[in-house]
Image (cartoon, rainbow, N blue to C red; front, top):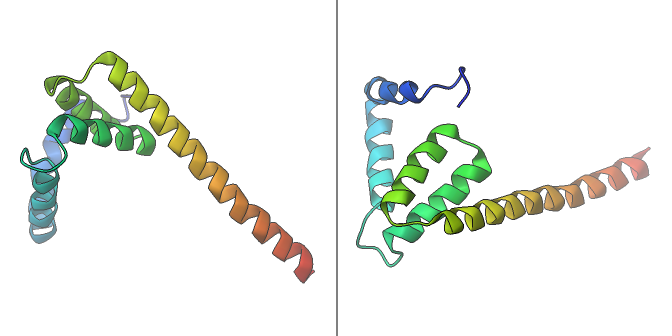
Length: 113
């Protein structure tokens, strides 16, 4: 994390939750639901998915939390590396998909004048 982002910032979560209590409670309930142990997807895989999403969204705090939780769930360094490349490919795929929209918009602009 950069100096701009500090691991200690996470300690402000209770303050944020108190400032928007209803939304905070709903968010926490949702978060707890997806972190459950009794789902069809085992917790280890849930953490791998969460880590892939965190890498894609580039959320430093999520990368920090989900890397530690993935380690606790038995994720190996090799699995982490594969997740990193999966996330990179998906992110690149998103850029490619949006380039198709850009081409269409460019062509529409060319036709309109």
